[in-house]
Image (cartoon, rainbow, N blue to C red):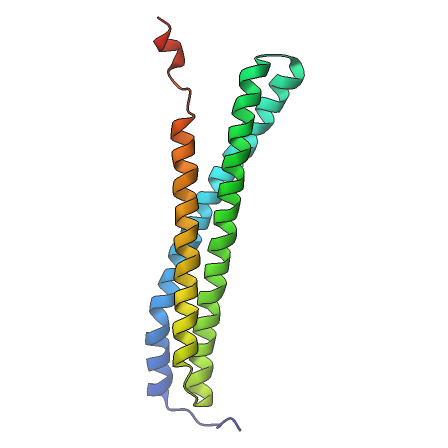
Amino acid sequence: MIESYYDVADIAELIKVAVAPVFLLTGIGSFINVLSIRIARLVDRARRLETLIEAGQAVEISRVELKVQLRRLKLAGSAVGLCVASALLICTLVALLFLGGLLHFDPSATLGVLFVLAMCTLILALVLFLGEIQMAVRHTWVGSTLRRE
């Protein structure tokens, strides 16, 4: 049965402990924002390339670049999915932390597992992001007109 009286100091302590994961959520949210902006730019460029292909302009190079854009989209999209999974794990961790304090049970083992899973999914998201960035750098054709001079 849930007790009707809680010590304010106990609840304040729970809030203090929950602050670190909440800051982590803020960082993950910022990372999702960066990825979303990159995805929007990739989609815009892919649409432009499709328009060029349909118009018969620079068809071969546009097809090659379009394939790269689609691979980058997959990487960025997967990174967003992993970031969301990490954020959900952190939210679950915070909720379980509060439930443990309010219902007086020890969720320590579960909290540890949730945190490790959240970090693993975030690490994978960062690795995919790094792959997308490296692909972007490898396949950037900016300055190609200067090399022809």
